[in-house]
Length: 261
Image (tube, rainbow, N blue to C red; front, side, top):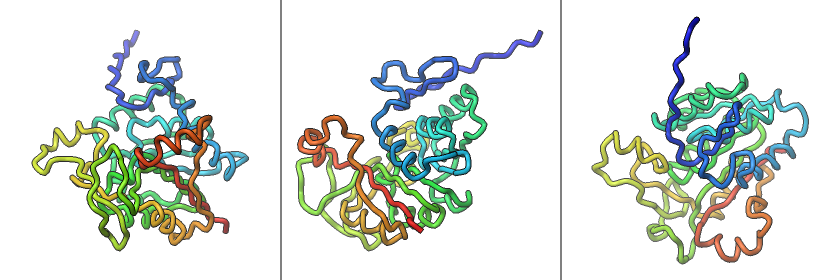
């Protein structure tokens, strides 16, 4: 009789994914991924744009961290690819892949700037990634060229005026021709091992550029998504309270682009 060796679960820092045997990957988290507000918000717009058989459509999850959103998109029926650069995070993705029965789910370890190597996608989901890049416009230009219908960006942004925020941002400046502010993420002398372990930080660059909110919205439109809006239902049920008390301090939102033709 062959004995299989149990795979030790890697440490999950963010995504509480319900595995097929019922185990959660991060039991101390307040939500499982299927009930997380940002996923519910993404699911709402995905169901609106792709209301029928989702197995006909491909979605890419950029900077997928530990694979939580990717798993839920695959469970919705989408042909799903998660792309993640860090060893520590891709270990979590591979662990999840081996513990869910989702043949329509795959993960690749790569730099998201190589998105043009993966062909076309019907939808692209970019959560917690854009604000870690030092060339966000170049990335979005590449991503737009590979995205047929729907773009969902969940990201921090900057404002034209100074606000009381929890983040230390540079004075307003320009980068890649767009206004925004720099955010310092990692010290210049950080080792490769330390860089890999800084799982919620940028990877190849030590500073990232947060595009000014209005210019991010305009950029999405300029890249060919002729319906563009900011989606607020992830703040439900207390939308007004959160927008008044948290929005400017957190400087984060969900921006959606749809190609209508």
